[in-house]
Image 1 (cartoon, each protein chain N blue to C red):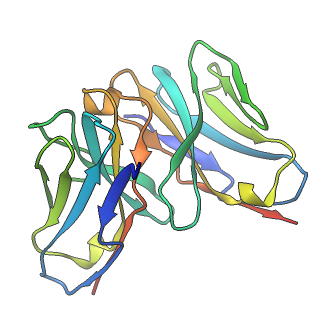
Image 2 (cartoon, helix red, strand yellow):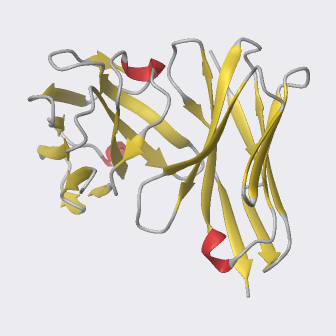
Length: 111
Length: 116
């Protein structure tokens, strides 16, 4: 089955810097890759997703890139703000199978 | 619009006790899910309901049972709690039928369960 690895487990940046979180997946047939943000005491919330027919997708300060050949995808956050501090999860899905989540990255943005 | 509501938020059980985690959504979604979240292991699917009246096992179903009471409500029951079930439990829902084939999941705020 699908296996998703996520790095780093923790990431500390200064406000205004960029943050990059990387995930690799094992099943070359995976075709859907969402990213979820989990704030303290809350459930995860979808922030951006990408499908396998697209190489990059942007939404304001957030972007996701996908490299199907290398089987990895990344979340890029530019001009980070303290409110970006949270745990971020990547996930991958093959066809109509269930989502497989990565282990999470705790992002801390210091003022 | 409350979204996905879970109760209780916190619970402490002794080994062998039973309890039911409640979940309700007010978005008229067809599919509902139960996940557990453990440190270093991400989110793992316990059970899901692809539509009202159906339930299916996820990747870690042992020790749990579920009931899709109606379209709004999906409960998770621990019949005989074990320390290995200490975790944070999340209920989620998604608009379409078909369970895991849905894309966007809407999560509740979680139940922190400790089994002593």
